[in-house]
Amino acid sequence: QVQLVESGGGLVQAGGSLRLSCAASGRTFSSATMGWFRQAPGKEREFVATINFNSFTTYYHDSVKGRFTISRDNAKNTVYLQMNSLKPEDTAVYYCAAVLYSKRYYYTAWNEYDYWGQGTQVTVSS
Image 1 (tube, rainbow, N blue to C red):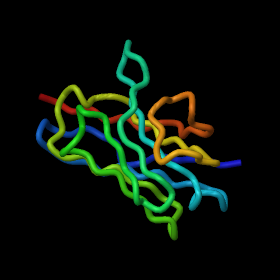
Image 2 (image 1 turned 90 degrees about the vertical axis):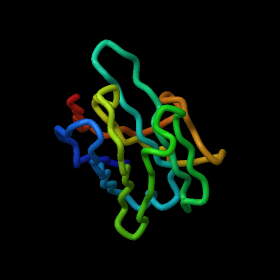
Image 3 (image 1 turned 135 degrees about the horizontal axis):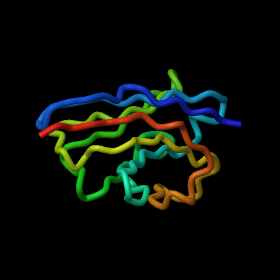
């Protein structure tokens, strides 16, 4: 069993930055592929970024490339999402997710993830 708890969301002006954190419980974190997704009101859950167990592979949605950076600290059982140059269209609830037994370098489909956090709200004002 893995529990994921996100933090770091909030209200920021366009062009600003936020860093989201996702703290994971369980000894399997260091071998898990981790991902960030987001969901805006009235829209489907959308892939944002993913990172494999040893940080060797990262992958981003085109809309956040060059602005967002995913990273992890296995010693702290935590994955991060650094978000820079935020835009109003980045407004959403952001979710952390885990694939425990990874067989590929990265995963982008929400239904491939085994565990989810409760989400943290990010609001970008114009």
